[in-house]
Length: 87
Image (cartoon, rainbow, N blue to C red; front, side, top):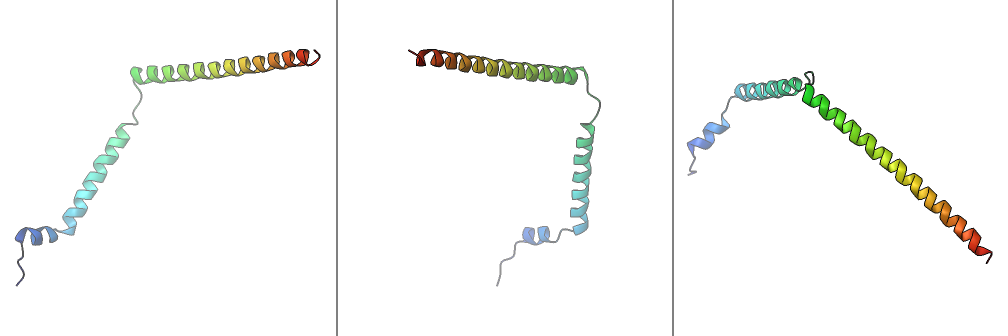
């Protein structure tokens, strides 16, 4: 004879309607939370975006300057090499 636990049989007999309703409720709440994040930005968010843009621009300027400096070093090295080849 099998020893059946009543708790196991009760959980397996949950109504599919209740389960569907719970999933629908969770989906609706999650969708509402996502949509509420799309509201207009406040001053802190705008300031944060401006800071991000300024940092990105500064980074690009640094990259450009480093590339120019590297090119100048290569040019100087080539000049030195050309001058020393004749010696």
